[in-house]
Amino acid sequence: MTGDPSHFEAIGNRLGFTIIEDSPQRLRLSWQGARFPAFLCIGMAFLLLFVSVPILQAIHLRGFVGPAGSLWYFPLMNLVLIGVAIFLVTQRRTIDVDGEAKSVELCRRSLYRKTVLMVSFDEIEKITLGIDQVFSGFAIGGSTAAESFPVPALRLHFQGTEPALLDRASLRRLEESGQKIAAHIGKTLEVAPELAGGDPTLKPKLRN
Image (cartoon, rainbow, N blue to C red; front, side, top):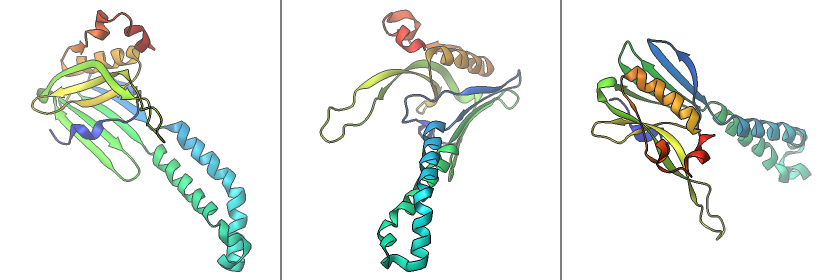
């Protein structure tokens, strides 16, 4: 094994990989980062340009001693929003199951870092579909502490180390992805009892 499985945990409650290649030799899944927050940041930065550009021109002409000098933080906010948008857009994860090389590669990319976990089929103990308890938010200003709620999670288990998170999504999507990954690596997808029918009140909530 090359890499650390803990680097592939996710704070968010959902990921949602999409199958982009499915052949007898290779299965490839991809997840693109949070698009909506990125586009929201870009939109806010674009609107702030109408304020930031005149401020920059005024500072260029009269310096920070002029009336616009105290509004220097507007152009700075523009840069921060653009930086956050670029960071969010460049977030990407891939799962590459190579039948010829008998290996699974998890790759996590961002603007400034690339993290890879490479493991052979022989090192994989099992693949499971279970439940993660994910917090809904944070306690702020003395408010009630955030409560956790169940989210379906697909994990790859290894011998002698902690499992790696593959995906969090709807139960229906994870069942499809999990069966395909399990078939390629020659394992059986193990479903938690509460998802396999042990808890009739829980499964419908996680289905969609």
